[in-house]
Length: 124
Image (cartoon, rainbow, N blue to C red; front, side, top):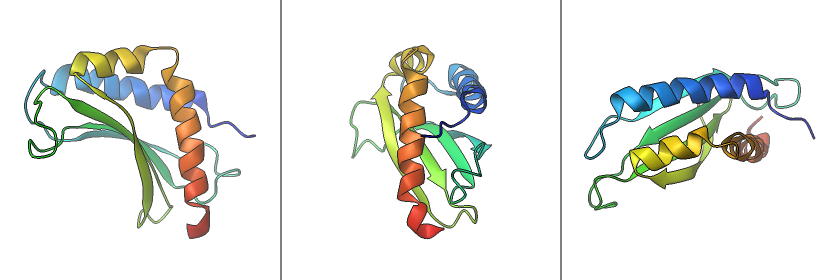
């Protein structure tokens, strides 16, 4: 099975880590922060235009603990009109950063992006 380019994904992960360290407070609301890369393997996944990795917080009606953040991945069709997405982590800012810096994170998101790419095959 084809693998997504780990080099491109690491660059996106590292950019988001840097932004989280500076832009995400320990508690309370903040604007969603996203990083994107163009599909690094268009020969294998021609149905995908971009991949994203983002951190966000939910409204207090959904998540009453103001310290909890969510980490999500998404794949977009080339036109950007449709996407597939799911959460790959949640916890405090410290928990999220620890997860993103762990050796297990890259295989987790690679597998996730492959699954999301398969979800978009019908939209090609």
